[in-house]
Amino acid sequence: MTILSRILIPTISFLMVSTFSSSLLHAEEPVWVPLFDGKTLNGWEKVGKEESKWEVQDGAITGTGPASMLVCTKGPYKNFKYRAEIKINDKGNSGLYFRTTRKPSFSDGYEAQIDSTHSDPIRTGSLYGMCHVYKRLVEPDEWFTYEIEVRDDVWRKRNLTRIKITVNGNELYEHMDFALTFREGYFAFQQHDPGSRVQIRKVEVAELPDTNKN
Image (tube, rainbow, N blue to C red; front, side, top):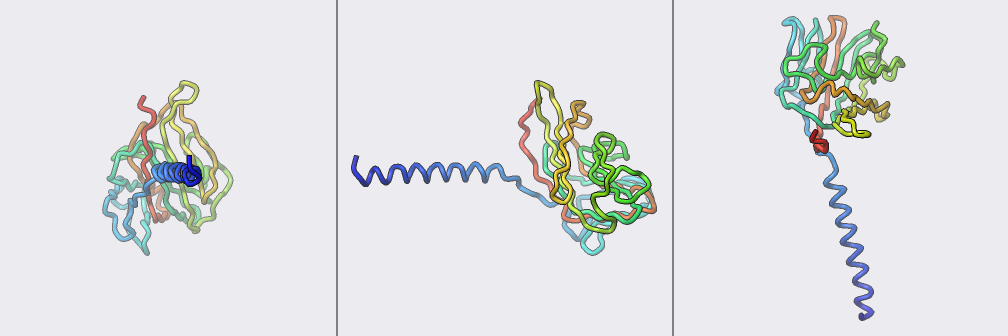
């Protein structure tokens, strides 16, 4: 082996490994797809009381009035990362729904609670009915980022759905739903009551591969 060969072979090997590792890292990066165009409610549909109002104000989806749901017509989704910027008024109540039905009621699908000061003490960061947060994590009338990661998995030979909840970049917990309560579905936002006003912007989803085919 020549001196040049001894120099070039390790260098080429290093470059090949680096390129391969870079390709793997790039392949694993989620592709974020916007679900709200910032201008219209195209791709969204109201379900609920006619008097309930959903509109776009200053680049944000805004819900007011009596009870209803605003459902994203794209889907269904199963394994994904999902995020949105949200603001709730003082004493307001709302919910970020996922794996819900196409025409949902308040009890269809998983609900990430949106509530800073409502009379219901279950606050933002809660997975309603499953894992509750009672500490106020965000102030009313302030924008915050909600991030949800959902994927089916197997743990100790048991099937489950993993649900990670993150608020303003702080991962709160991972809930393990062994009941597999909701298998797949759509995204929605809740207009809870006439005293609530919820605003939503920058709604995005990144689908994750289905590694559990059971």
